[in-house]
Length: 253
Image (cartoon, rainbow, N blue to C red; front, side, top):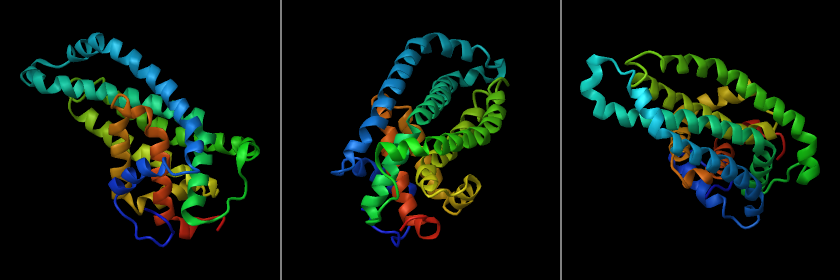
């Protein structure tokens, strides 16, 4: 288990698996409750509604497949389902993270303190209230970075042939990177590391972050498991921060 900032960085798979263990630590579980409740209510309701609509959406999407690709329809149908789940899952995951951002930041802060033995500067509800404007400003920065790129990729879904083949792959890769940014940013932001600096730091561990983001994206699509993914991803990303970047960027020791 991660315990110090001198630990050798490991794979994104390792940190994702650590997230599932870290959410159960004594003293950490109480900080998991609010992010977990937000995710259960929002993702649970959203995916229940989605699965009631898939029977209508997928045939409509498949109707746009050009004739020269009809022979691949048995492969394109599951790709179409995955495409809908990817876009839908990422959208509602982003919304859930917006709502739970202050609580995710608190969870990351408390877990970092537990892993390192350091003392954070502010804790509790008063600390959250004071930091809400800064936290929400950071969420807007992430949204401003994300939206133009997402719009370009979504346009690909309106191009026959590409919509059912290339677009889902590109969207999955983009979602993986964006989810790595989303969750790794909580500990970075707790130390007031600028958004641009944070993205540059993540690029130094690009493979690990893509692995971490890809697993997070996959679990976001899986019913039941996706209800728990938010606090798990926050904990896994915080463990990665402690190992990979804390020594260089920590504001409080």
